[in-house]
Image (cartoon, rainbow, N blue to C red; front, side, top):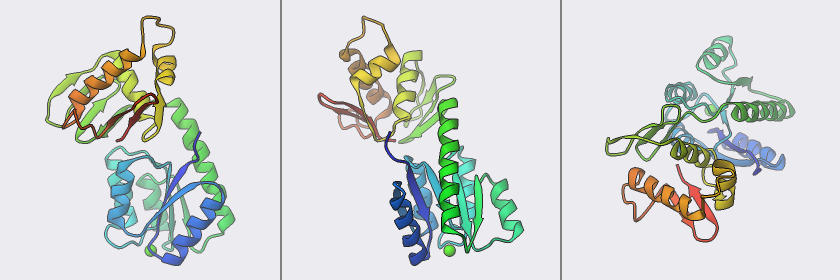
Amino acid sequence: MSSPWILVVEDEPLLGELLVDNLRHEGYGTELVQDGRTALERIREGGIDLVILDLMLPGIDGLKILETLRGEDNPVPVLILSARSRDLDRVKGLALGADDYLGKPFNLRELLLRVQALLRRALKKEALEPIRKIEFGGNRVDLDTFEAVTHDGTEVQLTNREAQLLRYLAGKPRKVVSRKELLDNIWGLDAATTPRTIDNFIARFRKLFEKDPRDPVHFHTLRGVGYRFEP
Ligand code: CA
């Protein structure tokens, strides 16, 4: 498994760098953004396992970011890190769906331990709860009902296999998934399945979900290697 990816949202440069350095030292992939608008855009792109979120930010403030994400059903774990450690903000943050809250100034070691605990909890949850809804490039797919609305508003009913494949790819955004991995995990021992079968599914996904199927943005084929889903 690749290392967890943490987004630090912090507008005080020195504190931001301190956090990034220490998280990297612990082996996490880490990215720093310094304003609310960029943070929201980056989180929506996906591929982030945990957000460390300051509240007082230029652009959109931290509580608003959190409220917006949860309103969009984005479950990314959020640890609020803020000087506004008054009880009211703490309660507001948790009510809006923050997973944890730490007031500034904080003990660095405590922060790292909390990060570790949150990631562990999220991993367990992920293993238990399959992805239910995905959104990318204006397409919306409900993986419980197999109903999709594509970028141009067309309603599509997916087959069980299509939904399984989409769920699998969406669960590994930006990662290369080999044909063998897909055949093993989705088709199992169905002997009639060949790598060609997967190519046909990917071709159909492109036709449905890509604005230009000949120039795909979301469903990439890496010749001789596998596939990569870009949300
Ligand atoms: Ca701040």
